[in-house]
Length: 284
Image 1 (cartoon, rainbow, N blue to C red):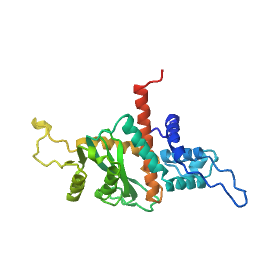
Image 2: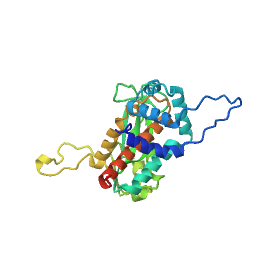
Image 3: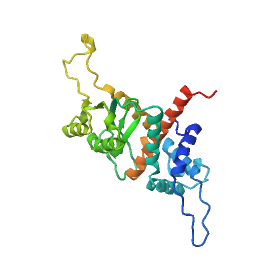
Image 4: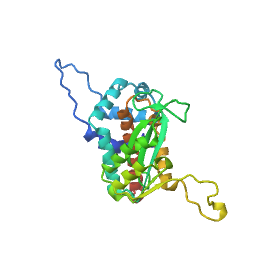
């Protein structure tokens, strides 16, 4: 995770700044306090995303230069203006143009995490003593780059998140280039297969449970790997889980969680683009 790497922050901010709507600075009495800078608020949002701290702690880490109320308000203003979604789309477009998405194999998987504050889009976790939690569902290319995502409650079946994540991917016009799609056995249902075929994806691979008596490596026969190409998306889920606010989310609305997820994905893509530049175009 490099959310606070100055090089990554500067690159992401250069994309965020043009997307921020112009504020209404008019006031009938002309006595508005000076508006906190957008760059400072963006830094506070990144601190909360990466560390998982509260808004109040983000204010303290910024030495009180901006209040926690202002940070929340600015986040909501940018959310209403679609800044986070447009930012993620721009990052994906840049990655596809510079490096190129590898859509020969696409994987779909969900990842469940804590949401102790509850709220919209959360539910009792079936694997964590029914504590409140949430889960994201991600479609990722062969290299683990997210190309579609959605959020649901921890108590919802994995297939519930498939449709919005798959639709987010197809709305970007990427389904036509997908050769194979890999999912675990929980997605092996008829309507999901029909959905993939309607999008033009015929090679649908769902992991199967190995049964007693199936050939194994010890018998001299290579057994089919139940994980398949899903290892790439497991790595992506691990990357995203490093963000404290995703791992233990305290937002109360699904839109806030999706904004955090979009910003985290933007940071991951930006870091990869910087690494690619340093590898192939080193500064001499």
